[in-house]
Amino acid sequence: MKTLYEPAAAEPKAASAPTGQVLKGSYTGAYRSDKGKIKGLLLQVGEAEFTVTLPKYLRPMLVRELAPDDFVQVWAYPEGDRWRAINILPLPECEAETLRQEWSHLAAITELPQPQQKRLCIEVCSKGKCFKQGGRQIYHDLQAAVDSDPELSHVSVKATGCMKACKHGPNLRLPSGQMLHRASPAEALAKLGAKR
Image 1 (cartoon, rainbow, N blue to C red):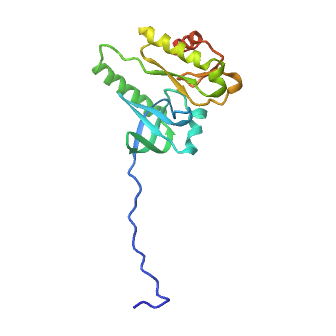
Image 2: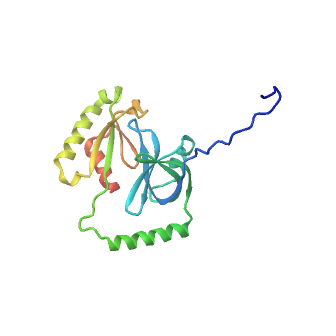
Image 3: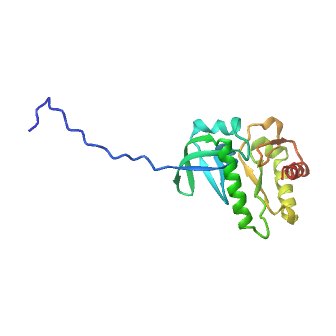
């Protein structure tokens, strides 16, 4: 029988922290939600591309400090079909150069006869004022242009949520993150062609 003043024996609790891995690769772009908000990054590791979800406090770093093709190391753990990051750091230049050489060697060995073009997505605001000011027409015109031109088979058009620039609508977002305001479908495709 325990007295009132006896300390209870503390039972050790099992650590439930997920086991993580360090992914080293090239930052290829931001991973966005359906509404266009940045949720994480796309990381190219050799031939594979991983979607890595970042905690909120790390997301602003993507815009401020990282450019496409920068090499980074990400501490992450698998979570379904994505990875959840714990931390992200730029990779030292010597390690980045080593990875480039390894990947170029792998690419030379496994040369593909028909290199696949990277999938590109043009996002068109489909909410409120933008859609009424011509967003609907731009969306349909872009979709028709992409469907009719076999050279644009790697381009997709997606209707998204508000891009927070309603006064400048209709608004488009290119894969590079650049916003276009009051643009025609031809202008958007020309800008996209310049980015390829």
